[in-house]
Structures are given as structure tokens and as C-alpha cells.
Length: 186
Image 1 (tube, rainbow, N blue to C red):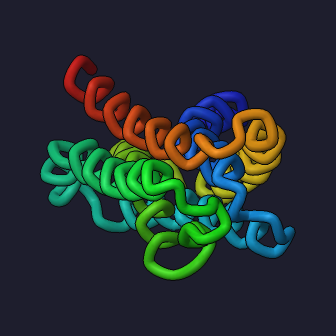
Image 2: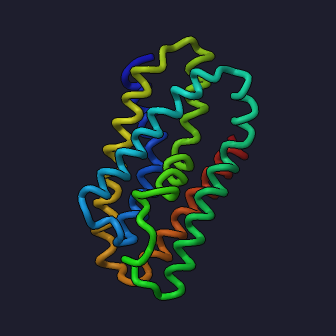
């Protein structure tokens, strides 16, 4: 597998994490550099781990997971998105929201944005391709694009004010829906 092919896969897998990172940046909660690094690091880490797990699991679980992975991602992203919308509609301060770079929310977002990488790992196992180099590239690309997404979201946040939480929630639900639609028509 060429580096060009690996980069295409890496940027494709990083797209969901990038979009979620924009939503996290828009929320106004991630002001500290440490929170920004923690979120982007975990997105990159999960994008590294999921193809490795998929590769290790082999073909038995691949067929089951491929049939449901888009629904799992949709449910997780919709749940988080609905909570963000609810928070925005209650006119809560953006800074009272839950920090997406901590706790169970961090794990949910990391899983939801990386579940497709599991299928990539399965595919590479079927092709008898070593997983380590592609997984490292995927993790680094995802971590970097996630950090850039947070920065972009922060720039947008000042322009959209109090509706940032609602927009971020809608964005997460849209991403979940897009994942389902792309799997149905794929």
C-alpha cells in the first residue's frame, strides 16, 4: 500500500473527527490549550487503535460490525448532539456545558468518530497488509486535523454567539445522519 493511498484513507477517516472538533471549538468550552490537545490527542489515539483492533479481530466480527457500525455512530453522535441542542435552547451559558475533552463524553465522541476505522483494520487484515504504519499515519492525521478543527470552531464561535451550542449539536446529528446515509447507499 502506497503512502498516497494511506493518506487518502487517513484524511477520509479524519473527516468526522474534524467536523466534531469544529463543533467542540464552536461550543466555547475548550478555551484551555490543554483541553484542546486532550481532545485532539484522544481522537487521534482512537483512530490509531480502532484499525489495530479491527485488524486483530479478523473477519468473523467484521461482518457483524460492518452491518451495525454506522448505526452505533449515529446513535452516539445524535445523543451528544441532542444534549448540546437542549443546552442551547435552555439558554445556558456555553461555559456551563460539559467539557468534551473529559470523561465519558470524550470516550463517546472518540468512539463515534473512529468506529469506521475498525472496518479499515478488517479490510487491511483481509488484504494481508501490516496495520502498524497505516494506523500511525491515520492517528497523526486525525489528531492534527482535529486540533485545526477546534481552532476553526473557536474562530466561528465569536461570530455566532449564543447559538453555538445549538449549531454544534445540529452538526453532530448531521454527521451521524451522513454516516448512516453513506453506509446505506454504499
